[in-house]
Length: 78
Ligand SMILES: [Cu+2]
Image (cartoon, rainbow, N blue to C red; front, side, top):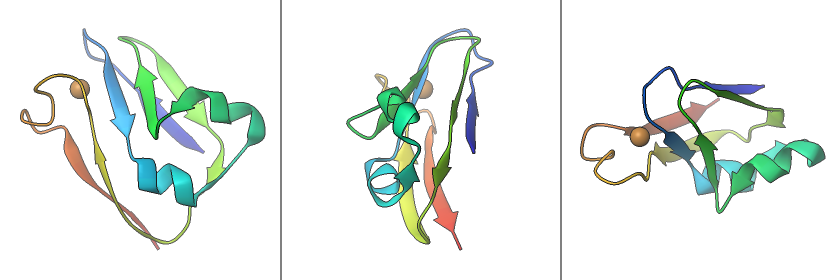
């Protein structure tokens, strides 16, 4: 289960297209993902049941300037 919690005052997204493309995602949870990205409004959470595939994947927030502010990283699945 991937649980994304946004405790901030503004919206953020979790954008990892290669990660989502490689994973097996529960059918009725696929609607949360658009173009490899999950939007999480302020104060909300999203839970996505998935089985990730081993590998390294880039992840970032695509909101304006957010990547520059440090919202990027790497997902490592072993
Ligand atoms: Cu952000």
